[in-house]
Image 1 (cartoon, rainbow, N blue to C red):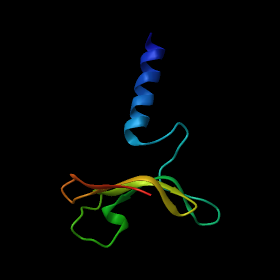
Image 2: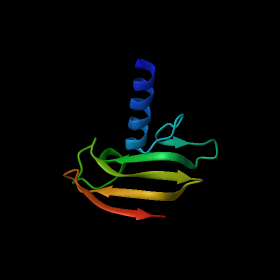
Image 3: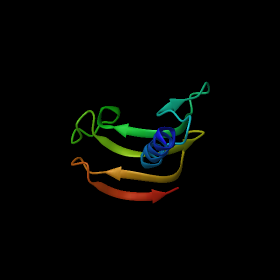
Image 4: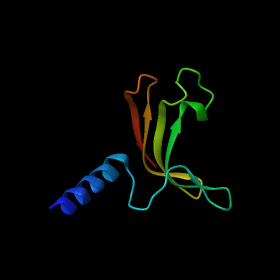
Amino acid sequence: MIRKLTLLLTLTVLSVAGLRAGDSLNVVDAAGKRQGPWVIRGSMQKNTAYAADAKVEEGRYKDNLKVGVWITYFPSGKKQSEFTW
C-alpha cells in the first residue's frame, strides 16, 4: 500500500511539473543545444521586473528549439500565456 501511494505521489509530482521519469531540468547536450524540460528564471534573463528566483517561462526544448506547450508568467507569478510550438 505504501509503495503504491509513493508511486502515485511521484507520478503526480512529475506530471504537475511537466517532467517525465528520468528527466532533468535545464540540460545542455554535448553540442551545446538545450534539451528536455526547461524553467527560465529571472536570474537567467535581462528583465529586472522578475526576482532572481521567479519563474519567467517553462516548457521543453528539442535540439535548441521550443516544442510543445510553453507557459509564460507575469513577475507576480500569475500565468501570462500558454503557447504550443
